[in-house]
Image (cartoon, rainbow, N blue to C red; front, side, top):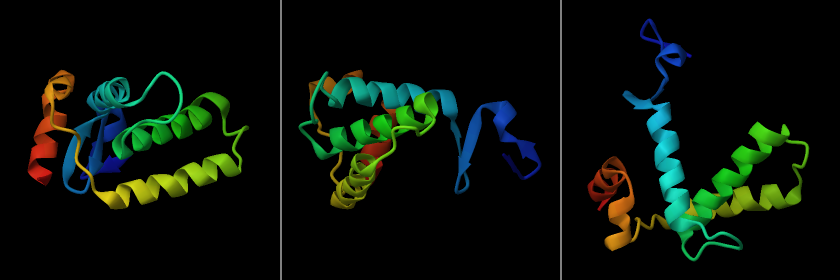
Length: 112
């Protein structure tokens, strides 16, 4: 991916709008959110957890399985993802949140 003359793929960053984000840091943050919000089995208890769980399942299906198991359940999951996103609920603010990367919490505070 190129932008403004830079090869972002070699830099391990992605440009969203006018902001650069570290792909590695985004992966670490995703894992932190997964560990915090997604149970070992079954559905998550929060909209945020369900969004992270759905995104992880879709990523796994494409990156690990090449989409060979894609079916109506995945389509339903993506429709639910959009509905959860429209809720606009911020991350819960409690002691466990301190284990999540400060940049996630900083972004959360900007949205409140």
